[in-house]
Length: 159
Image (cartoon, rainbow, N blue to C red; front, side):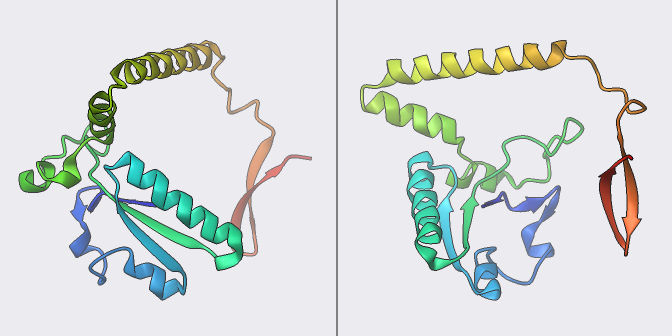
């Protein structure tokens, strides 16, 4: 799975690699590739499901490239000003959750959507509270160390 948001941090794709579409990389690796509108949740389920089934059926690895935008900056310090406003206001800049909410309401399932949102929000809040209550790990108490073995770095348990 590749979420192609058109940028690596703030550098546009056309300044990063020679191919015009990340989907072309599948050919370079000799595998099947599937592109999709990453803002369409139903299409994502369909295409990813099909790719998973192809892999399970023995067709080998599959590459799925979803085209979408990161709807906020790369980090707290990043306001995302480098994203072209035309791109931001295009269909690629849609919020997939808003798209799905509109579809659910159109189908008369708005209450189901609201219930799902409430349940998801509650689940996130419970997990955040649980993790926030855990003690902060002390790096001096951990029993691992980094070692270099034949040019590779890996974490090994201390003996």
